[in-house]
Image (cartoon, rainbow over all chains, first blue to last red; front, side):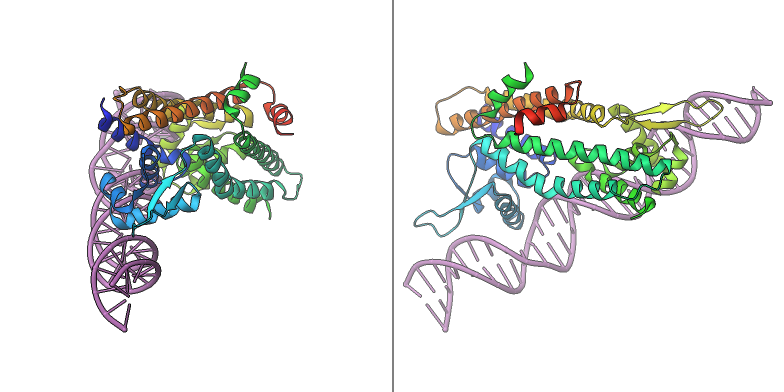
Length: 167
Length: 167
DNA sequence: TTAAACTTTCAATAATTATTGAAAGTTTAT
DNA sequence: ATAAACTTTCAATAATTATTGAAAGTTTAA
């Protein structure tokens, strides 16, 4: 496998993995491309590399900026905008975890809290609903907390936490 | 909010959350319904509650069984099949984590490993590709290990790990 | 066996989601 | 002010994914 093959394989795999961290294919591919680029890329370059339209590129770049994963770069003497992504995987993981929590997990936690707080009328089915949604609420909330806390450890939680917990 | 409202809210919220844990809406809704049911449900009952077709119900129940989340129940004297889901959230989390890892994360880890193992020809771009995909490989692998290990602790890791880590 | 009760399959269709491309908008240089 | 260089917007379209429903398949009881 040479450079170009490896690059294509990486970008497309990362793209199809987008769903795993909750973003669409084009968005994930743009991020992947920037992630292995040695310099900031212009919209033209992104379009050309990924063979996607200008509109698509524009929209997805904006979303990545929204997520806090990509930033615009001003390059002196250049008229067009250039883009870079966070290059540190740790920081990347932190940002993604935080955003997903905010966008998706928190709203669900709220619903689970509401549902598990309905009045207990003493019937079996109501009790089951309360019991099960409460369990789910606790699990979701705790898992979310944990991921955020883990991911926020400034030093390499990877090795440290692993050693502590997993042995 | 009364029982029926709460039930509908829970089932539909859990359904739309399906994407978060990588399954489709109908599948997630069926699981949610079984999760709060006080008794095993037949295909008829699932169809009626969720207003989905027989074919859809059949296919998605089978997928849930594939995932190891739902099991068929034989009820003496009954001709049709009944279904239940794992009721313990801990066990549920464990099963889901294991399956997602196997189905989605492992294949990506493999690609990252392959890509990061290409021959270093000394060019800047190749070095960057190797460096970045290696970092991603390590992160992904470690995070995957961690989740699996955490989720596999038999006793309630929830409280224990939380107390240890988060304080 | 046969037939009723039930489940699965899958081609057709519907619903959803992503992508395009061109017009409208913005910024910068002169 | 004007125009070139560039970006954004969004209605139309394409691609993908989910759902239906009816025919085919299976199991059970008599």
